[in-house]
Length: 561
Image 1 (tube, rainbow, N blue to C red):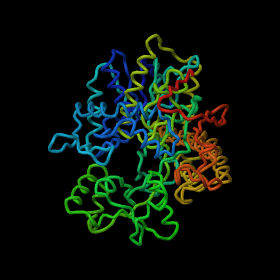
Image 2: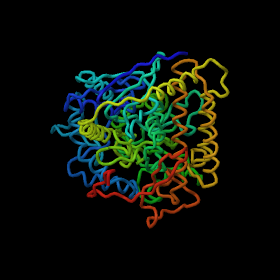
Image 3: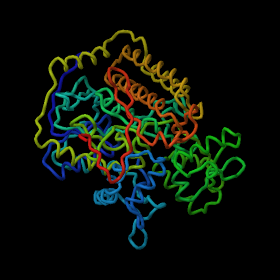
């Protein structure tokens, strides 16, 4: 297949039209005349983690709370390893970005006094089934923004040591895009599909995190030599069994405790009431033979049950349908289980190593949302906040910059590699076979569901070697059309993320976050040696580990320092 070249030029390229990407574009349009291209793999109207909607904003400074108290909550949950400066600068913007979304049309539930209805001390309730279309409409109505849907960005353009744009291809037609940009904001989201999921076969995409977030943004940064951080702090969601529906709405919304098969509340027996421990305690109860475990809902009222039906119909219809098929939550407790591990910077601290401007270690490249590391528990509003910060930083950066273009030989090489994969010759390995093998390796040897999320050094050595083999085998993948080419790149990107993840798991020689990072060689937390960040760079094909000191709220970490 012969591919057509299309050259585009813009001031700022935003890769990913999800939560952070759309908000960044809106911010740029409202504060400048800069031209913006959003490159989106799907369609911005229903793409990313907000595609199906959400029923609460889990990061908001309610009355009686402050950005400082939010930072303290995140610090406790992350066991001290986080970028305090990033969390704090995000927290300072949570309420203003929320008001912005309300102005755009998001319905936020209010009480009889006109105050937002809170759910706990950091959450507010919304009618968010249309949150993504609201964002998309705001983007489409903003001057200076061009949206290219159905384009898969594959690598950055690096010119004179700076990021100068990106390469991509159309998912639908035989077109290769060469996009020159004065600055790039990566907002592609985290990585799902690295491990064997709860539900195999036909239902393998019924998972907690968006199955279409494949770690592409991470992988592009890894290949370009960007510094990454805290991949070992995986996120594993505690979810309703089989449907993989969220549990927070039940636990916080109706106050349902976690109980084992004997009806005992068990969570508090395992230490802190952190996000990781809610999962870990459930894993241990099952391991000790006291499972299955549940959220105790049999004490809720008819009104609370009705609220649960409505809430899940908005964000996880399968759970509402399951209740309607069975007895309902007021009659039958909700069984819970852990998912496979994910790499996601919105819930944990995995991602690009950025400074307070959300600049990566590659000049001209910014990261926002799930792809940006160091700032866990940012959720939806935190992604908005980081999109806003990255937008203002990119505008500042491009003031004295000109567009740069790659050399013709580099363009020729990129197109040649794509056309090689599209050659109509027998493939040694199918994309799906590579993906299945990757997920089995990660599950067996890098702390997946089958091992209770635990791993050790010897297992990681096996995982490391076999993932490297799969990376070599992936060069033999062939694609019959552009959509199959997309699928091939998705599995290649996941393999790069796996490669870095394994080295991070190996490097942190303690257990800081039970289940998220369960190192059986080093089962205890060790603050004397490990209150530090585990960072990495890919150098000459090898993942080189870099240890960095903690950054406090009042310190100013910038890359030039």
